[in-house]
Length: 280
Picture 1: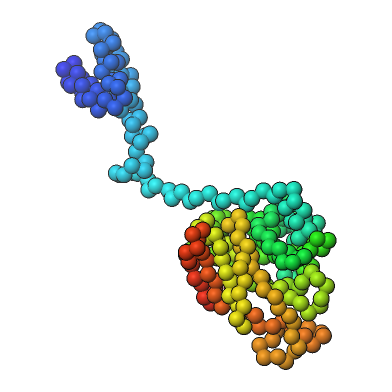
Picture 2: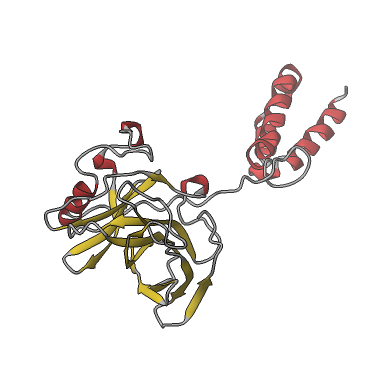
């Protein structure tokens, strides 16, 4: 290879190295004519490395051969709110200062410690209250009073359809997670609370739950969660539509949610749901 050919090759490489501030050209100008022949290999490698740098740094994700597609970045799960001192007492009472239990009543320490749970939403009902406490894995509904923790015990329910751990990654404005019949905290054996608990998107400021037999109840909306209740009573076994007959010959009534309507802060309806409800 002649000196003239080498010079042409260096000039081409120097042109390609322009994105790194003409490093190749500056390197060539420093070389003494007597040293070019002895160090040609080292100079060529240095120039080639300088030219290759932009492709290593900028190639992937910017299209062209060998590029990789952009990775979809999922939104980080919204953290659950921290309890105030007063809320921590409610959470402690709802968990009965113990570990959660599954639907068979078995203790499940693997589902979390009391300190893992947070008060999600609470609604005062006379001298009683209804509430829900939870973690990123699931929740516990609760009926209590001033000196009563949770009349039904801390039964754990996993969140329905929470992709990637984001509890608010659901379609629509409202997600119903649980409809449950709970004993009241007033000591009356036949009185019941019918509860509906779930999640709402930030634009939901108010929510009303409609039940059969012309009943409706305004929900408490807090921290992106809601809970609503209506009064109910057990009925004698044999009444049409009864279920869950117990040893006393009484059973839970056939209480059904017929509609859920959500409103924004201006009072405009942003969602109307009717059965069947997803996940319930």
